Every structure is written in C-alpha cells, then in structure tokens.
Length: 372
Image (cartoon, rainbow, N blue to C red; front, side, top):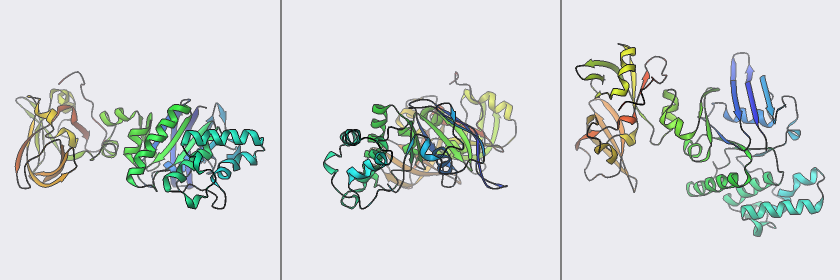
C-alpha cells in the first residue's frame, strides 16, 4: 500500500491542446478514489500518467513519497486492470495470473501460493485450468483482477473495467470490487464515466471536465454540495433539473422567476445569497427526488409548483414523471403515482433540494445551512 501525490500534473499534446491541466490530488494510503467525467475529460490520460504509460508534460507525481515522473512503468509498483481484460488467449487462467510473477523470477512455490490465494479471494479456483475463451465476461474480469492482486502492488489502477459487462453483472462486480478493497485495504484509483459506479464505490470522487478537476469530495458531499452546475448535473440520477431566470424580492422574501415557466418562492436559507445576487441572472437547480416526493408532502412549509404530466415512466418502486410548467420541462421522481398523462399536479418541493448557481460563472451560490 502507498500514498499518491499529484502536484500540478499536466499533459499537452500540442502547445494549446491540454488533455490534462494542473491537477492537484492527494490520495491517502488505502483509499479508493474514483476519477469520473464524460468522454474526453482526461480521466484515462491522467490514469495512464500515473501508470507510466503516458509521459507527463508538467508537474510532479509521487508514489509513497518518491518522485516517479521518469520512472518506467514496470518499476512503479503498480498493477493495472484494463477495460478489455488484456488476457493472453493461449494461456490458462493460472498461467495468465502467474505470468507477471514468472517474469520477475519469483520462486515457483510463492507463485503458486499467490495464485491460489487470489483465486480463493475471487472465487475462481475452479477455473484455473480453463482458457479465456471458455470464460464469461464476469469470469474474465475476475481473472484480470486476480492477475493484479498476485503482484501485491502498492497501488491498483482500474480503467473502466466494468464497461464491457451487462447491467446486472456490472452491479454484481461493483459490489465484489468494493468488498475486495475493504479486505485488501489497498490504494485504488478507478476510472469510469458512470456516475453510479463512482457514487457507490469511491471513498472520494474526482469530477473532471475538459482536462480540469471540477471538485474532489466524498459521494454525499458532491451530491449535497456541488461546487458548480456541471458537478450538479453529473452527479445524481435522474440528473438535476435546471432553469434560467432572475430573483425577485417579494413581501415575504425572495422568489425565483422564469418567464413563461417556473415561479418558486425561495426558503429563508437563500435570502442572503439572493440579496447579494441582485438583478443578475441565476440558474435554479431542482433535484428530481425533491419534487412531489412523500417527504416533500410532509413539509407544510414546502413551496409548491403547478405541473402538467406529459410522460410517466414506471420504474418499479418509483415513477419518473416528465412534467411541464409553462414552457419549462423537467423530471420529478416520486414514490407513488396513480394519475395519467395530462393531469395537473400541485407538487411540493423539498427545501434542501433547491440549488442556486450564478448565471454567468455557473458557480454555486452560498446557502445558510442553519436556516430552513
């Protein structure tokens, strides 16, 4: 196990083409950190620089307190699990897992001990004599993870390892990888574009966009306190609803107003931010699960919005309602719904699911957490 330190790490493919720019990140010993963001945000490039597969243009990379910028990948004491598994098709599962140890001239008895132990941990002991083509996608993924485990590296790197699996198997493997981390307590860096994977697996999440780190925080911190509109839109399912408008002073405080759309009285916690914002444009964010939910109906002080139902998506234990207020279209996530498209609803809004962002910078406005 080891710490990982990234100080102003950058990658330029041309003078004005930054794939990754000025990334600062400190990963603690035994921590599970997830890099998440849309395609092309630089997360895989950053992982490859940590692995030594990409040259670092600028900054300092340290593993266990030692600078490794110019150290070859084989000497960095890391193990990487790839998206496409990268198994040798002509070798058995046992030989695939043992191959790296043989190259390092590890004694045969120790190789066997490590392979058998990893196979036991991953429940693939009965597959050791099979070839990769005889395995399912999930079994191949376990073998790829097993090959990394036998190395006993300082740091594990995962590059979208579950993206080739079907939805059900992906959920199962998420649980298995998280359980594996809790047992090994190894430092792990995991790349994904799937915010659900990030939220359910990471101790901390690094949200990236256009080569820049937007926010680094725990899953719940990102969800409850996004630093800007992009993070708010990326974390949460369904995504947060956004409305552009202005803040209007009323005899009871402040309201958000959108032309031909939503008008929503704001809770007291937003009054100070509204006063500071003045007449400048703002962006109102509403979490779908905060609109019309059972919890919202219990709040007698909850502001309400009138909405017409356009589409209903039954999801089993809940419903996604695609609704409109004037020309504003958005999604509400509710536990119960017995109506039909065309119905008009008066939907209470949970006060702690309301967010405000500056209309120009899209940065989150400050909220008074101690007020209702």
